[in-house]
Image 1: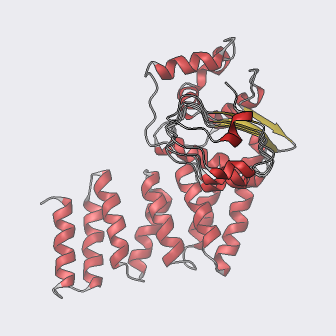
Image 2: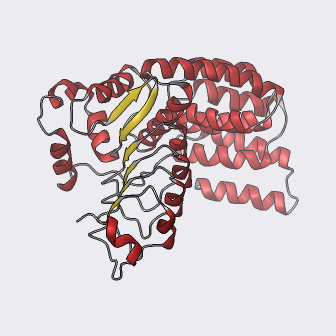
Length: 345
């Protein structure tokens, strides 16, 4: 009998009154403990929440998964259930995890959960988490708020199974980026704040996969071009990548280059970067100019080359600070008069 059929039979028996939710919970615990498939165990744990009982057996199962399971996906799922369903009982184990957890999947989940769940126990947990984030931020030469964005980036890499833990190589990578001698700095930090960011997930992925090559890569005169060629040759693929909404934490960011990421969408939170002066969105898969662009009151240069944009919206008309825009390589047939004076060829 396959896993889905097991779960469907339990669900039907609960609906038909054949078994209680308490009994369903016990059956799913047994299935979870006997399962050898990682996929099945994740499915069982997610379904388990529907029949969750506020008893010691359920709590201990989740606590054991959180503390000792090898899968960060399972630990992350257990953390969510514990924070939301056992907020008082889980404080001690969650503090233990906050101090020792290395997976960005779990840490990012805890950051999200603890900030959203308001309770006295969570206020205590938030202090523990802040201390952990302060330690992380110090290693990156950033403040805590901006370090949360880097943690979210690490989660993107963990989702893609490029990395599994935050370790010494993590800090070496970001310190290397800050010292990288290229024409356009990939990560410029001043006074513990990111001022300039050139984020290309494909290029960053290549570097993260081969941490031992950092010193060798720095020798290339045009590292940007080298990595671009590798991407174009298809040697580095990166499916389902996304820009974390916590990009808004970079309150003093002035220059942002997101070119060649093949993004189809971007978070609205980008529009909260009030000090942004330069935005490069070229070589993505955008169908339209995002509305949030009009909120970037200090934006001077906007690069939209080689997307799938068909029209120029009127929202750009009121952007008095915008003095140059690049839009070639799109599907635009008619240019509004107001945009022509600032178009760069």
